[in-house]
Image (cartoon, rainbow, N blue to C red):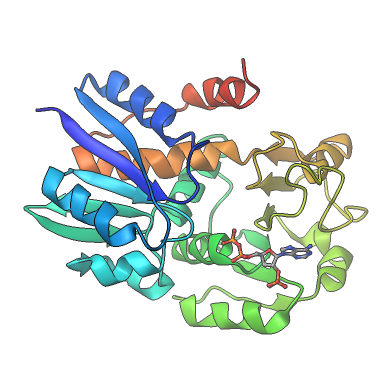
Length: 279
Ligand code: ATR
């Protein structure tokens, strides 16, 4: 059978998802298509009707529909429900079930190059408290690390994350200034805001004067590939982790849900980087 997959969102003309899923289909030896279904809010009901009639096997959901899609689903995964956001829909015998693959995708992307990083002694600092941070926070907590602190400009937004906690993972809500002062305490620092994204490539969310060489600094921004924060961290001798890896691994997880194929995609990280560089 030929898989019918795709993406809804607005705008999505520059999305890398078709390229990523074409690689996955090839790798899995499967026939199929991954198409863009673009539409503004007014067009959304018709776009979804089209997907229903076409009986797609599944699709991804991106900005600005990660929340509103919930109203169109027959079923929702527990984590996606708690997060209040869906980025992957699976057609299960004609019923649409929603998942969120961002957080677990992030965890997979970091565990691949740093297999021993996440354990019950790991301290993580999350920078930012937006939609991307929510999924990553929940997935890190589920890894049962020791601490996941959150630093954000507005502290009340970060405090709302406490409702996403499970187990005995500790979380403190910090200002960026407070986080900078205790930076050496962390094994992993994850930057989840848009600060440093093209065209504002000189911007950097925190200063790294207190960074330890043993810390992994991760930035989910992938345009540019190496943000100002990552360059700074690298110059200080720390290890770095690029944002495009998360994109690949959240796709890997979505693909797995649609096709039941568990692919080894590690070799595609560099190819995606080349693709982003326009090579
Ligand atoms: P996303 O869904 O991509 O995570 P979002 O939900 O709009 O986007 O979240 C944006 C995050 O980036 C928030 O943590 C926001 O901080 P506030 O909650 O204080 O607004 C953060 N952010 C965006 N621009 C920022 C800036 N210039 N300085 C500091 N934080 C910024």
